Length: 245
Image 1 (cartoon, rainbow, N blue to C red):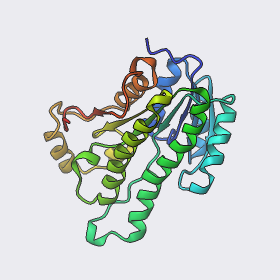
Image 2 (image 1 turned 60 degrees about the horizontal axis):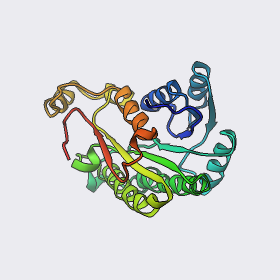
Image 3 (image 1 turned 120 degrees about the vertical axis):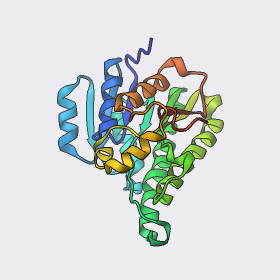
C-alpha cells in the first residue's frame, strides 16, 4: 500500500490544478502536508477541504529567502521533512529571437535555480532524518523541445539533469531524487489552447486524450511511498505515450 501516514511533505505550487490534485492524493494516503503557493485565497480553500494540511504563502522567486522558507515549513510540520514536491513553476513564451534576457532569466531562475535551492535546503533536513525523497515536476517538452519555449524547455531539461546529479550525491544517505514529466494535462492553462492547436497535440498522443491532474498526482504518490525506495535518479513519464524514453 502507498501508506504515507505520519510522513511530512512539502508541496510547492499547491494552489494550481496539478498542485491541488497532488495535495489531495497525498492527504488521502495519510500524509501531513505543508501546501505552499502565491495565492493565499486558494491555499485557504485547500486547507478548508482537507485534514492535516498546513499552508504557507511563499513566492519561490525570492531565492534569498528559500532557506528560511524551508526552515519555517519544517517547523510547521513538526520539525522534520520527509518529502519535497517541487511543483511550482512558470512559463513566459516567446520565439527565441524575440525573447528578452529578462524573459529567459526569470523562467530559468524560478524553474531551475529555485528548484535547486529548495532541494538543497530540504536535503539538509533529510540528512538529519537519515532518509528523504524529492520529487521534481518537469515536462515532456524538457525532452522534446517546443516552439516558443527555449527558456522553459531549458529549465525543465536542466532540472532533470540536476536531479540525476543530486541522486548520485545522496543515494548513500537514503535520499531519493526523481522527476515526473507530465505531457499535456487538463488545467486552466490547456483550456486556453486554441482548438486547432489542441487537435494537433491530440494527434501526437497515442492515447488520443489529455491527461488529468490526478494522473500526475498518482505518480507523485508512488514516488513518495516506500514502494519506490529502490528508484533513484529516474524520470517517470506521464504523457499518454506522446514521448517514450
